[in-house]
Amino acid sequence: MTSQHSKTSVAAISIFASGGMAAAKFAVGIAIGSLALISEALHSSIDLVATIITWAVVRVSDKPADEEHHYGHGKLESVSALGVTALLYVLAGGILVEAYSRLREGTPPPTISAVPFVVLVIDIVVNLWRARALHRAARETRSQALAADALHFASDVMGSFAVIIGLILAALGFWWGDAAAAAAVAVMIALLGLRMAGSTVQTLVDRAPQGAQEKATAAIRSVPGVIDVERLRVRMVGATTFIDTIAKVPRTYPIDRVEEIKRSAQAAVDKAFGDADLTFTAVPVARDNETVRDRIMVIAHNSGLAVHHVTVHDLGGKLIVSIDLEVDAAMQLEAAHDVANTLERNIQEEFGADVEVDVHIEPLEPELPFGVDAAPERVQAIAAALTEYAAGSEIHDIHNVRVRNTDAGEIVNFHCRAAPSMSVIKVHEHVDAIERALRRAFPSVKRVISHAEPPRA
Image (cartoon, rainbow, N blue to C red):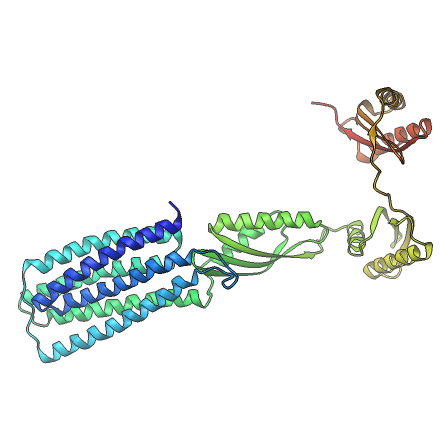
């Protein structure tokens, strides 16, 4: 059963129950002349009005956001609860005035019989059932309107007990018992209204739910990649928790990694709150463990430049930086030199004017043209050559050799194996020697791409 169907079904059932019990108490109260019972009937009538409003509101409050209501329609439940609270205060005031008038004038007590007690006992049973059903539905759907309705019916139970006590006092000869019970009902109605008003106004003024900020902050901080939460705001609109946060992420992360962090943060708050709408603003910041190379790569990335082979040396307190900068192959030297100078200045601004920066300008590697697989004989010849050049080195098991012919030349891909304990730089040196030997033996080979891996387990 959907939450919308659950809310509307419970609200609709409550309408019939409220109407039936209000009519029964009102008729009996008039018949025996009991102000307390009439007051309870009027209270139930207000509940009937409240339930009808609730039934109408929950049919609208679950509608999705639209062009005019960007946060959905959930606040309608709070507005309806506030309206019902106003009705309760009007009713409580009227009952108190009438009770005071009867106490002052000494109005005769009501006629006592078993009928009002039977009606009140039935009313207590019905209200207990309705309060439980509404409370369960409100908890499952987080509906403020249903929660207010459940509170009404729970208060009806206390009001019915107060009326019973008043009738018993009247039967024992205390003429003021009925009027006093009516005043007690009015006080309970006023206290109920105060409790409802406090909760509803807090929602309308966007007060964060108790503990929501701490829970949301903990959920977002648990996401890998989030360094810290700089700011977080929470508001409730109906059953949906809206969370707006600014979170710090490493500035070295690429955009797709940051997007993954956002998705993980949404999943984390959904798990914590059930129904959450997260606005996640990522602020890139420098981490304490950033290396000089990391900082240089950030500078180049922020300038939209392609760099590689970044080497950093510290010579007696002086920083030496060497960079390969890739620019458009058709760019004139003067323009390329300006780009390199700008990069050097940006690095000096980051590390100090005494840093020594050398930028090697080279043409940007173009996208490789469309190619076709080479003939099997050519692949076998190149695979045999690779195996031969690997002999005597720490590289072995040359496999998965592929050769493709393109207008720019032959492209060779191959896999190989090395000892798992070998360092990356050691593997690179051996593989690089094999690649150079292959290009010397096969001048038509434009590029060689190798993939080294440990032996199979």
